[in-house]
Length: 304
Ligand code: SAM
Image (cartoon, rainbow, N blue to C red; front, side, top):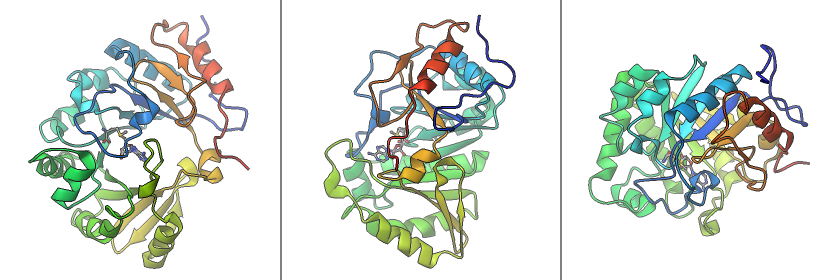
């Protein structure tokens, strides 16, 4: 048995200590976004049981991970998510990224089961545009908006709205999104995400430097987050975070995240797929060494 010592952290060869775990619990999704990277998965061979997911989270916590993000596919397609949440050890931050379609009716039970907050993907406030981006049908947009209100109501806050910036599709909507966010008086944060080209979607690439200059111009002040050295802008009562991963050496140098695929593989980097470490059938005793192995192959994708 090789259980982590109380003070053992996962530190890679570049001095980056793993503090955050991003775990995909399904590859299934109820939307079909035109740009989606599906967390780097091509469609995996199965889903982990609650027990396996819980074991992974316990081991990560033993290694000092204090922040957990649950993702997918669409994580709310799993009816056992509440059971999963209730099985986790205490962590500083447990969050979920969801498209929000099924959120309204689950917000309360998720909060009760231990979820702290949610990120909700909303790329457009224009219903027709939303349908085009997500390839969804009538009524879905309204469900997402209701999901946002429900999340705020039950205190899954701060709610982050994830907006992937798409040239000629939604980049002109940032101001509308700021106004929408402002009504929540600080309980909602707008997160603007640079597109990563996984689906031959480079035609949607925005001029991210221009966006950054505009945010800087509008902001009363700017802060830096520890994770990825992301910039946070404070614009007339709204907090706006810019996620700028592409060609960004600072982003990688400050990445403290380990990923887990829906079929139970530790994934050291979203952009690399040849160094996955399978923990899906590992016992609690075997897992720590597999975590250590995964960390050994962790290299910043963009580096100087
Ligand atoms: N279905 C959930 C959702 O919509 O949030 C979780 C999975 S989704 C893959 C997680 C996040 O990744 C979403 O905020 C989505 O906008 C973002 N995302 C997906 N593909 C992306 C891409 N090519 N570039 C940047 N962000 C992307």
